[in-house]
Image 1: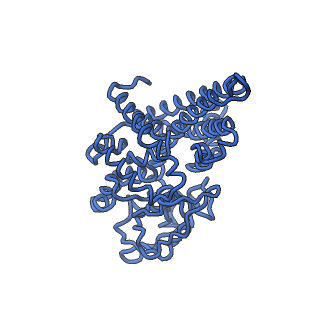
Image 2: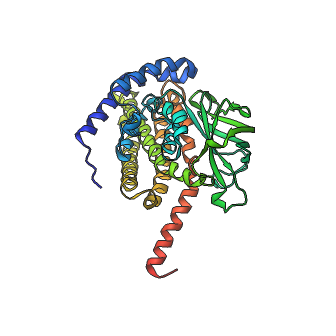
Image 3: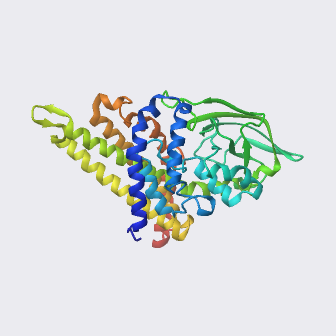
Length: 402
């Protein structure tokens, strides 16, 4: 892998970092203390600035109004934007919209793309992805209770979902539901587009996460689908291909998440160093003079560097050889990067003492918002078991032990 960054990409990253520092980090206290609706007008102004700078939608193809960056380049952008809460949103590459855009580009019909994709890429509407269920294990995604029964020209959807991120204010959901319970396990489910104003789409609540429910884009909803009827033309991709499409969505998506976690680590390292260098602990001594602090700084720096290189190598493998060849790397980076982020955020909080527990810095919000990184997109333990089985199988085959 060539780790060199092109001159053009270096310029892009410099522009993004400068924008984050000057325009977005100063908004953090508003983000942490005000309702989402009050912040939206300010964020829309920032979005217009980004569009004028031709930095909008870095992940998406130019023909759709994006920058057309490849996966490695976009990973570097994620790292830069994640240093603050609203970075990905202001630049038009926020989850879950980014993943929904990718599958709508590949599987959407021309009519679906006109109605849902075009305004989504332009940032005129938001969407959500409705897969996780209350009563079924997220670690086994083929276990779904939500059904979509074809009655005439309509699918009738019934089910109970939660952690449908950003449903509050979304224009539509992409729902995973069982369409053929008699089919082979991995061909039972399909993805269906459901406008959120459809009768039977019921947003029950925004789920409190460690006491913070959030609202708007920054929220996770519980949803009841009760005899929710949509036209059969809203089927996304072929019937029964829901799990195939989900895997295509989740592979590159894990690069986005992992590099975002590295960006959070970078911000926390900035805060650790600033606090250590300025916090007095006795006359003529600062926190940075303590060897335990120096040890933490070194350990965090090493782990961040290791995670970053692993993720970029995985992105390069996906870009050049496809997600199938990168399966092992995708599992490795998911649990490793999530663990690194949790340790770095925790060290940042510890260095800040009581201040770290408050929302006077972004650390507490990183802590409560990102602990879920070890759960969503496959819990760490499942990824570890999966990758270990593949490693042992390969080793056994090479030694003739299987």
